[in-house]
Length: 201
Ligand code: MD3
Ligand code: FE
Image (cartoon, rainbow, N blue to C red; front, side, top):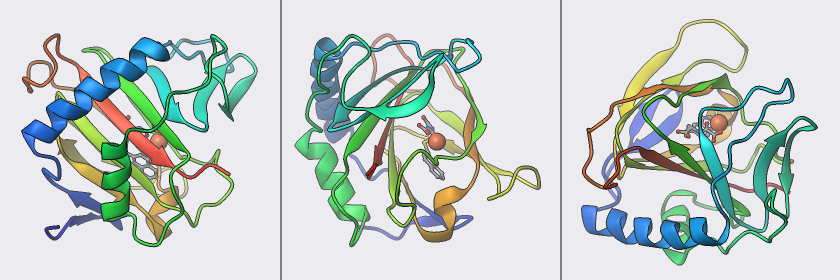
């Protein structure tokens, strides 16, 4: 495991997954999406998000008019598929002493998708890390502070990069400003996939 870059306390492992591993992961994700289709979450105010989502694991993250929350079932009623072993191995490589992940959120970004600055705080234990895996097109990732406002820092996340948020970095504001269409050959129709692994309970 090579030395990660530090970004405000987050650890960024560039190219942790080889192109072969990334392609094998896409095959696993296609099967998950077949069983638990991508859906368009709606914010509590009724606005559809630009990112499409599904999950694997004991819990998935959902949003609708009733609010944001973790749920044991997909909006269509089925249980979430299991988290692929390959994804668990990435967690085990970078997450140190953490508990096992309970949710693997799968975010799909088309050309126009973005994610505004937010904190991840729907989980019960902020001492547990969050691990993110980027696949496909490059994305401009922005990280801010624990409180709203103040300076931000940006970097391009590329296919195969893995980001670990632990300790002080766990509650930083973060988001995706834009995706660069055509910047990766991994997904035949283009786009970006982000996997976010979390301990929920
Ligand atoms: C920094 N996803 O699903 S991943 C999310 O690329 C989310 O889809 C983005 O933010 C995406 O909640 C960013 C990188 C990431 C994930 C979780 C974090 C950065 C984080 C939690 C705390 C601090
Ligand atoms: Fe987030």
